[in-house]
Amino acid sequence: MKKLMSVLLVLSMLVMGAAMAESGTLTMATNAAFPPYEFYDDETGEVTGIDVEIAQAICDKLGYELEVVDADFDSLVPGVQSGKYDFSMAGMTVTEDRLQSVNFSDTYATGVQVVIVPEDSAITSVDDLFAEGADNAVGVQQGTTGDIYATGDIEEAGLGSVERFKTGTDAVLALTTGKIDCVIIDNEPAKNFVAANEGLKILETEYIVEEYAACFAKENTELLEAFNGALAELTEDGTIPAIIEKYIPSEEAAAE
Ligand code: ARG
Image 1 (spheres, helix red, strand yellow):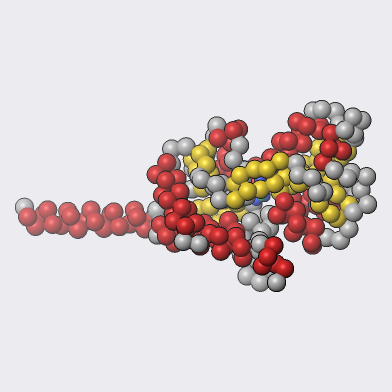
Image 2 (cartoon, protein in one colour; image 1 turned 90 degrees about the vertical axis):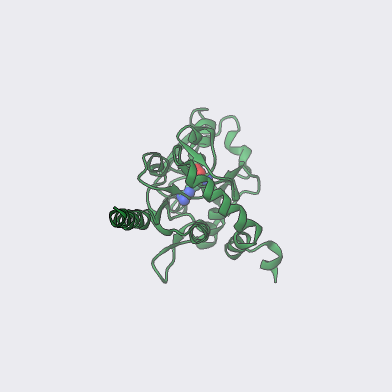
């Protein structure tokens, strides 16, 4: 009897071990055309950036392998909700609407919606977009908060049209070729796009300030709590500030 018990014990340990190994990888979904949060590294061909490095540091701490999947931005929340992905980090803004479908972690960064225009644009401030009689073709990345705001404030207000692109990169391309009048997008990607393309600038006035967080399926509260715990520790010990500083050098460091 004793022998049988120990055989059973060993067997159950083996089974548990296998299950743990299986759950040892977390799949993070993102949309990798959003530098410096997520983009393809030219040299390695891999997706990298602030979100990927933070996720990696959290997975290291919690003992998981990290797998990064590049998908359409508007498929991220549904994919997390259905359990296709364990979580998503994509410079994703916490919104009331998304909170109906998923849970968000504590926030780890602030984003600002800004407006990119050609250098010689007649649009000189964000308010110009909402002025009486305005009629601009506004580019956004489909399903982003930029899309949601522009749809309400501009399209539905009869102040112009909203052109929706698969990526921010595509929207900026349409702007450089004169197909649209401006692009509404998050400030850090905006700076990257303006640096990479001649003849563009960012309007000084801000559209709206937001908070970024990772999202999880509603029922996956255990992973969410573990994630938040690791996020807090890695913020406290300076790991996360260092990752952000690496991609977004503070003014002082940049001036040196
Ligand atoms: N912050 C905006 C939002 O949540 C845009 C995020 C776009 N992210 C990306 N990886 N393409 O809607």
